[in-house]
Image 1: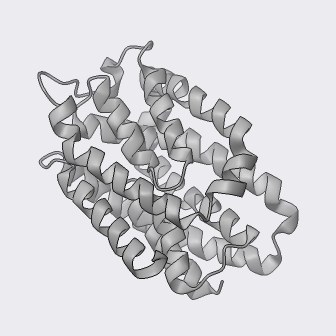
Image 2: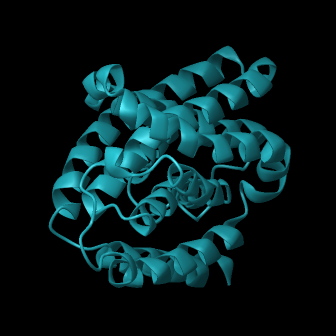
Image 3: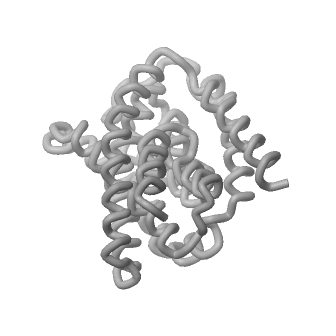
Length: 256
């Protein structure tokens, strides 16, 4: 993987991490299109550059993270299911799921079908406009949904947004909680992976990671602001259609 590849993957990560389209799935598919082999470093890179997107969230929500303890309570409770399952299943996920193109395609399409109908299913009646309105008992349910995204192609953002809407949040509030929940979740995942893979990363590999990190950070900043403005007025239907089309095109072009 050269630096241009790293920059492209960083942009893809920043664009897709917080949209309900599966960043991991897009990274795997992009790497395939670019002819980047699925080596151990590539798998680590796809996880580690998420740190750039994480810091974009920290930058955007710094004041709220610093002062809003009620939201932190719900973030911590929602993080626990993913943290426990991620620690227990880390080796299995990285060995059998990361790099599985067919699994990504299947989950892209299935997730797309769900998003086509998610607004009709969960947006009836009065909805909560702030994360702090979610009861402490219901917060872990969002974390259980997030845990589903450990399988590539599911989309952490889509899973947590659907979980948030299921407990009664409106689209915008569910999306914001998904962003904030990403901070401990992705920080833990990237830190753990880098710790486990540290001895295998060369100096040149660290340069490659840095390039991907920078591009992911800048792109995520722009994407999050744009997505929140969009989702305040529009449904998830367009993302469902997009996922289905990407999955079908990739299957027909590359996997037949």
